[in-house]
Image (cartoon, rainbow, N blue to C red):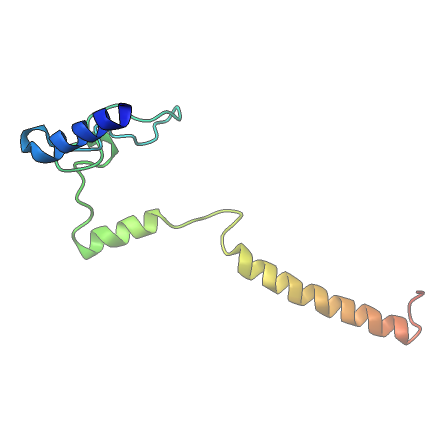
Amino acid sequence: MRMLALSLLKNTHEQNPMKEIKNANTRCGAKTRNGSACAKFPVAGKKRCRNHGGLSSGPKSAAGRARIGAAQLKHGKFVNWRQQREREKLYFSKIRRVLNEAEEAGLMPP
């Protein structure tokens, strides 16, 4: 019985264009500062509200794109950490090699 009712609702929805859902995303849903989802309505034709980028069309000029790119640059402790870790591995392997050679030559106790 329940499946029949659901199929009837689905068929009436598909056949009646006036009941068509225009925007399936009825709320913005962006993550707010307190961690919950934004409950504002999105800008017409967009997925986000005006506070979360619904009005933004992005940078248009080359200078604007460069400014946004510079703002996204990471800085601090973890910048290029993979490259730094590879250099450290190289240095540690050289140190181990020198220590092993010194141990084999009898310059260091085992």
